[in-house]
Amino acid sequence: MADTVGNLWQKALTAIRRAFHAFEKSRADGRSEWELTVHSEFDAVDGAWIAWVEELPGCVSEGESEKDALDHLTDAIAAVIELKVDEALARSIDEHPTDHRTTSRHLKIA
Image (tube, rainbow, N blue to C red; front, side, top):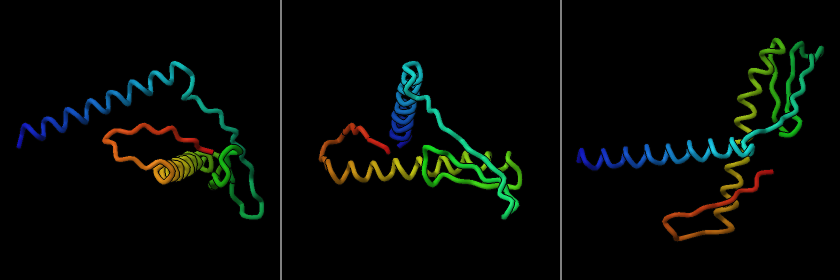
């Protein structure tokens, strides 16, 4: 049993290393950089700051200060991206089902 757990941990660590190396390679190629246009403005009606990302429709946050609104925006960005990736994965699986043990998918996220 201990050997099996050790093997599982080794496989997990190997997968993490591969993912990290792939990420580092993509950074060297410049593909991991995103340019996002962030807007913020004070809403006098609500008495709060509102921040949004132009390139991510629906990505909006608010706060008592501009800093609060921008801090909350990081959570909103993560949520919008997660939703878009989940949707792209679901479309990919529906359009290209597979019985293989290993599959690579290229996702188009719009």
